[in-house]
Amino acid sequence: MFSTNNQIADFRSSVYKNGFGFDVSVFNNNDNSVTVHSNELLDNNYENFETFLADLTDKNPLWHTYYFVRIDKKYQRIVEQKLQETIEKIFDNLSKSILSTKDNWQFDNEPMNEFVKNTIQQTINNEYHFEFLQTQNQTPTEVQVEPQELDQMWNGYCPESWLKGKQVKMRLNKNDFYESEETGLQIAVLSGVQAVILNFRGKGDFRTTISYADEIENGELLSPQNTERPPFNNPTEVFQESKEIENYIKKIN
Image (cartoon, rainbow, N blue to C red; front, side, top):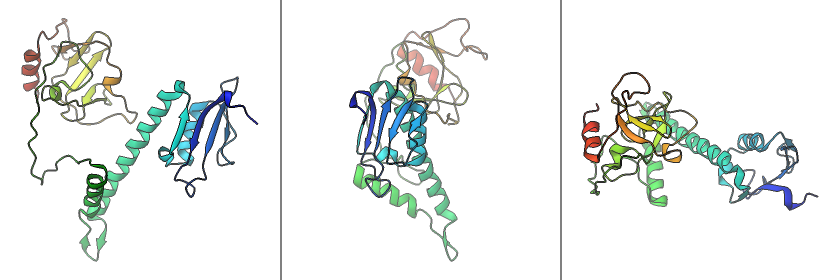
């Protein structure tokens, strides 16, 4: 019988394994390994919490549906990262489903077309009050927003979208630049010093492991790109006012 004093995680009421058959309790040992109670659905011992979590998400792909979860706060970053990976996989699977069924699923010689996409969109809109971005064959809706000025100090969000009154995240891409998920604007970060707005846009080639700039921003000053080589700003030059940044961004193709 383990004391709750060394219990570091508790997962209850998953929809996996017929509803409530995959409850998991995790206990910490002195050597940083963990002991797990899961009715033998997982191993009894793991090298550490991160190894346990990787196996849990592999054995229970619906681990994000646990109704009741309590975890020691020191593992928050690990769990949040794993949740991000899971959510990314969910949407990747939805995208593949939409693409596959559009033309490749056929009744005799008639493709299914947009049935899956429309069903997903309708369900999300009706049940969860979210909306998909407008597609090319839809009439865009004009949304009136108050423009926002930019400070010299970068806040981690896309400067181009911020000027339009929107908070849009910037995500690390495979070139180690932070790229706007909306506009493709890229920023090269010299941590704690400069955030250089590059004069060319990204192509949405993001890293699989998600990292957002607003989670790591550290008081960098927004700067223009004035050289082709890293750190892309030499001699040192920083923007002085919001209008200067706006005019610079307008010239980026």
